[in-house]
Amino acid sequence: MCGAFITDPLSESIALMPGEASGVDFAKSPVTKGGDSHPFSHAAPMTYDPENIFAKILKGEIPCHKVYEDEQTLAFMDIMPRSMGHVLVIPKAPARNLLDIAADDLAVLITRVQKVALGVKEALGADGITLQQFSESAGGQEVFHIHFHILPRWDGVKMLSHPAPKADMAVLAEQAAKIRAKFA
Ligand code: 5GP
Image (cartoon, helix red, strand yellow):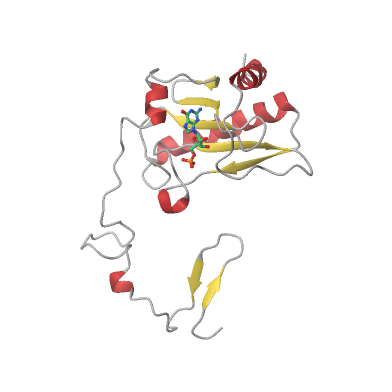
């Protein structure tokens, strides 16, 4: 292992043994450059764009198939579902992703994610749930308002890969109604 990158098969991230030759100059690494005092800050600030698609859904400018709503949270069907009943859960408070959301908002959000996941699982008779959250483009994020993906799973059924085809809106409406009924 000396002087080698270690590949983590689960996360695809690479770790480095301390003190080993890497070929990477950490003084030039994106997480340390820029003169910012926080060692994990990016040189470029991560800003929230109030015109992102989910902000427009929150403002009612774009429609969605809502499954759950409260003062702090909205959950709705993903229009390109990677499993049957794919739901997105977002906070109403603006945040770009896991890297900038306020801790208090995240604490509320994750409890709502659990609540919605239980409702989705029960409504659709799923065997389990896959939970996903992507932060920044490098992490796979495409819409920059934090969201958790709730993907219902059935034994032996694979998820579709991204990008999945756009769903039939009538089917989404039917699934949303079933899930909403669990919170009525
Ligand atoms: P990300 O890669 O940012 O975690 O995922 C964004 C998700 O938003 C994708 O799964 C995509 O299908 C979904 N999405 C993109 N645009 C819309 C939209 O206008 N409405 C809904 N309901 N979902 C969307």
